[in-house]
Figure 1 (cartoon, rainbow, N blue to C red):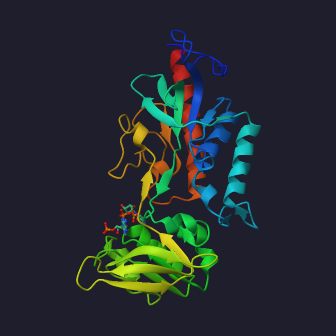
Figure 2: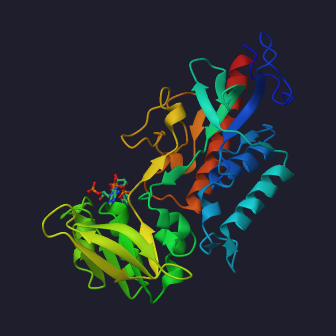
Figure 3: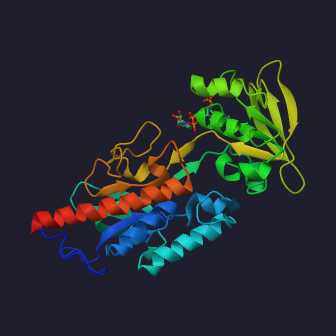
Length: 335
Ligand code: NDP
């Protein structure tokens, strides 16, 4: 088998049997912190990476306003600005960045195949999946209206802007409990809007929420609208919806945080890769290796716990190193 020789395989190489199929050494899917960091490391290791951006170039951070917790930016930076920096750095070392959405994958052979935009097939020696996760929203028109103006799906990213103010968190799971607790450390008051009369969060997290005097739990409440002139000033809720005691409740808030779960963007790869019940790609602990040799996963698509730009970037670096070592081992085995 000579698929790994030579390591400086030119980018315009093609499958010998089907010249319409392009072959690359390192294919990176996703353009968030994980994807771009993987690209920087892979390019510097001469893997000549080709990166497909996905629909939202720059990933979830492009929907955030200011990023103040990424090391290296002492004065903070806008989310889109930071992702532009990541992109420039990846390009500087020769990453080829293309717009395209992975629509199919076939990892049944040693040469890994991913199809973009339904008809563009790429054959790769290594694939780094960094497709991220998408925060779930309630589906209210008001969520789009106030995007970046009081509506957020990341308390760790945006909570600081609500210091001393009143905010609401929607959800009853561990994320909601964690975010409400985090926000209670910054804000004057935190409403936790829970649709049932119990929390799904772990007992330990429940204790924290229930014992925090700054957190006011609104049991059996559902949000139906947000209001405000130039940003969120309040929310309209329905208490005990569908029961004889149903009533409309209005709360005054400056920030509205969604914490009703994330959906990892792993659907295309699920046939071949092991995922957990939510769809997060499973990796071998301490590495970015998936169950398929040569396929690596980095960033939010494999991380249900931390989900931070800096941890995603770190795992992107790990994925490129894992890919480079995998290629070297394969090359050594063929010599
Ligand atoms: P979960 O799926 O666990 O919880 C989602 C919560 O949002 C539930 O309370 C659910 O309500 C509520 N919800 C869903 N849809 C709506 C809706 N349309 N309107 C109102 N409420 C809604 O997601 P999490 O993100 O909290 O957690 C995901 C996983 O990550 C879990 O396994 C969790 O344990 C883990 N995690 C672990 C952490 C840690 O260990 N430190 C931190 C954060 C997460 P209902 O209960 O009624 O279904």
